[in-house]
Length: 242
Image 1 (tube, helix red, strand yellow):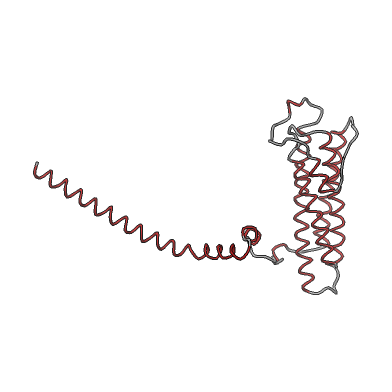
Image 2: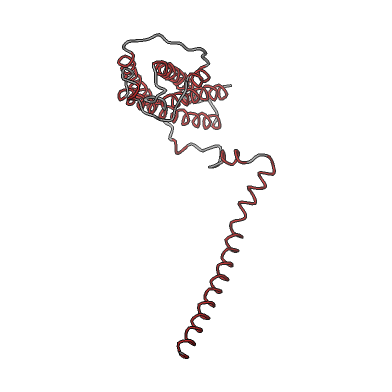
């Protein structure tokens, strides 16, 4: 139950952080608005709550000396995934702060940049956070207040990551992956046994293909060499007779 619970909590964190990244891409664009800023605020706070819950659960499990070797290896793998998610969240929060400072809401719309983002972002945020019909009241000082809060939260996330490194020392390079490199791509491309067969054939083809191409190139080179000699002979004959 511990592993399943950790995986569920980590999956929820990953979804919310992905939602936050999506929302950050709309900052400073024509889709930017007070509504977007409020969604960003709620989403990052939700991500931080999930981060604390993940940290507490995984830290307790990794400090438990009674767990088996296999369970510890799995918890260490989840810990590495968790820290990676936290690093991405911190990067996006800093990016949000920088863009928010460069593009305050209280400017004419013409100063906003065109990023290709159009329409509302509420659907994505609502789906990730299970919130519907999100409405926010106007805040006259939303730029100043929110950016200050964001700076504080970035510092808190940074401090939490430092504490995580001190409490749980898991070297990312020492954690073994459960899948081979590129396994996700193969599983996406492969559909059924027929697709597996196609992949196997494609993996075996290069050697035969290279050998066939080398033989063709040799024949082609021989033909060109013979043609050059023939033309040279003809030209020499014409020069002598003329």
